Length: 378
Image (cartoon, rainbow, N blue to C red; front, side, top):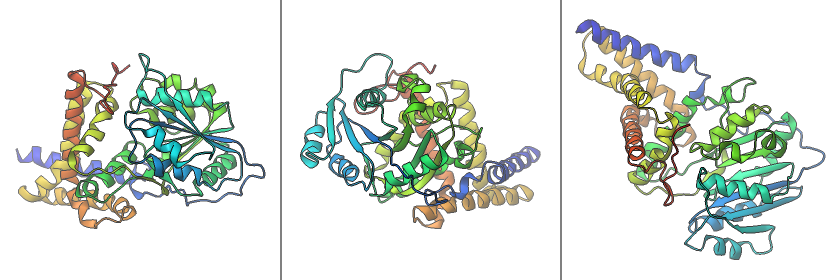
């Protein structure tokens, strides 16, 4: 028994050492839109923003208003695709931004094989008439006035197929303070930004803010190529990386304005796509839960209840875990003490993953905005 406990402690510590020193420096939160500067282009290309919106009455005015307020020297238009809203989203946007380069489309009925968001995006892209760049952004994201200018400058300087920003999520309520920094931390663990930005590395993106080169999107097969993807941003990032280099980073410029007032809404947001991340595989689900227990639960349990070397190894792993979380906590201006709560936070995410699998088994996978959208995983 003691040998098994010591083996678990050693393996847990080894995993954390590997994560910190051999996983693209994900935890450093160093890939920022403020890092690296480039000369602005001599000629500013045309850009069309495409915004899919479904029942976004509470946030649409601020979101669209931030697009209208962009300080962009080139030609810039906005297309809002109203995806069957029942709360007057389109009317609010029209009143807010009348005669400001905003076109509002009423989305067509959702065809089989598509998720609602991607069907709305596809319609907006078709109506954009092939500008140099498409700015794909969500209806609950507000952007600083210089955001588009920075995106285009970076894209033109690097001849990038995609520039994506991980919008800064709201972090005010207790649920948000506990869970939101960890959401970005876990995302970076799966998709280390430095590897995304490296030639030949993995492909990923953050859906709240993506500047896409139209030529690259067409070469990748358009939005139709990922039409059933629940994790559509990473699917698009992977598709576009096959067409050319991409860049993904953290930002303070683009911020989420959707509030999560309690733990339930955050859990629903996580559960919507968690099982899709595991390719709807029961074996991967079991492996993930076991892995989370080894990586996150074992260190504090060993530190509190084991004896001898196993306790010290558990303490070391727990300390590395807390240290790795500090840069993200600093980015979100949260207390460093949340680092020691990461095991409890990971347990919440594990529960959401199990909830996601249960919803899928009941035919309610990917449920969002009144739609169950999960496909068969292919």
